[in-house]
Image (cartoon, rainbow, N blue to C red; front, side, top):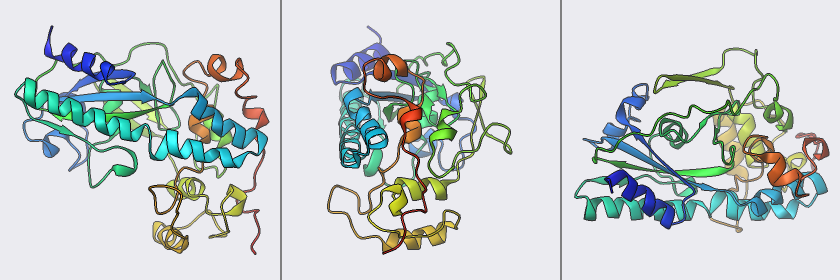
Amino acid sequence: MDRKQEIKDLAKKLGMDLCGVAGIDRFAESPPGRHPTELLPGCRSVIVVAKRLLDGVVQANFRAYEDDMYGMKGLWGTYGYTMLPNFELTYVCYALANYIEHELDEVATPLSTGPMTNGAQISLRHSAVAAGLGEFGWLGIVLTPEFGPRQRFGVVLTTAELEPDPMYDGPRLCDPEKCGICTKVCPVQALSKPGEGEPKHVSMGGKSYDYCRIDMVRCLVAEYAMTKGLNGKADYTDKLDMSFEELAKVQASMPISEAGLQHTESWHCGKCQVYCPAGNWGERYKKRGLSRGVGAIKKVDPLGGGKE
């Protein structure tokens, strides 16, 4: 058995749903400080693992958005965003790195995931595409044929020279001109629509991808639920358009959360991720009665919560 297959078998044994390998040449367009060889001198391969989000956890968001059961969002925060599966990914990346160093006599650097991410590292989502696990969807998240955007990724850099997996070359997973669900469900209109300005462009492994431009300030206002209209505890701001400096001041004004690992909770949205139709969405959710679909989402005014 070759070394790559040994690593993939171990990843599966440890509970991972997907595993792929990218060669260093696919990171030629990485920005300064984010190339694998800058993080690990002599790096020859990038291993990417993925853990799918449980259907039962994803459906917690449907209950929040379709049935006004916003308390269910805590399950999404715990099992889909902040803690698990990020703890599991962190453990598996460390275990794979240990195996590579102890059994293959190579160097391996596991990267951090989720809220445990510290300092600069390479992009997990770009790594997942480079490893052939999927392609970029219009929403800027990686889509896999198995699960759409509903998985989390972990990365291990290694000096071991492993045969790269082919880039994803299956059926197109996202057609924003025909779909556009991600732009429709965004409560703060943070995602650009096709034809609105220049999209983000990425080239790697002989393939090119375009995806939306995300207004990250608006996105973060929703993720952190900075208004009561977004189901926040108070109106911490009365505007969606501001600078990052202004956003930082708003975030600093929010009380420290006692509900989890994060000082301020960033798991309050996720609409684009859970309603994206890629990954057999209808079979997994609508046909099983876990969701009534985009039309059942309660309309919200992100600035309509009022002030006390």
